[in-house]
Amino acid sequence: MPDESCRTCGGELVNHILCSCCRKPTRKKCNMCSHVTLLQPHQYCIKNSSSHTKPLLVQVASKKVSTSRNYLHLSFLAVAVIGFLVLGLVSTSDHGISPSIMPDDAQATNSSKMAKNLSSFPAGSGKLYDNCLAYGSGESVTVTCPTNDGSVYKGILNMSQDLKKDFADSVFSIRGVSVMENSNGSVILQYHMKKYVTDYFGN
Image (cartoon, rainbow, N blue to C red):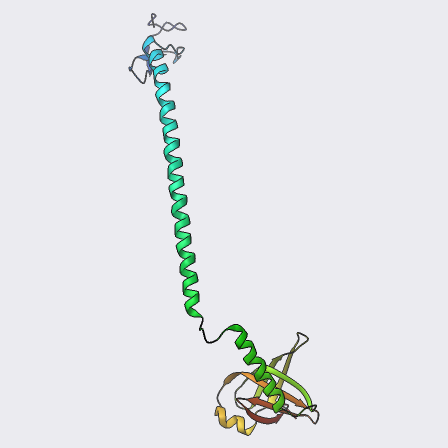
């Protein structure tokens, strides 16, 4: 900058912006009017700016290559971890299944139990419900059973004396109960191959 005075007011100019490479002033500011001069790069900055751009491009390209390699390593690591997890789950689930009981065998057993339950009730005497849940407290038994049409059968029955002996007047909940409604109004509960004759609560 050949002129060291402000062109607007004639005041003294001081350094405002310096070159990042050589620390020479590229812009100055007036002390009196705060006017800033135009950017005036000097020869050293122009040469350095052209030489700095090429290595920056090379460095950016090398960074991209290294990050793409990192992504590749991370993806392989993620696939390996997921593979080990899947193998672990498969191996533990195989050990959890007993080889003597398979699902087909369990269904065959259940259907044979149902056939035994059906044969133990007198044929044609009323409606039969299997796989029921019975719960009560000593005075009555509430029975909830699934039906073939998707609805739920629910009945509140008197507690029979034999059933009171088995559960000793305590709160209970039992599964696997069969219920047979007879046409005369009596109800037969079957649990563990024992039959308990009762009727509806309040009758």
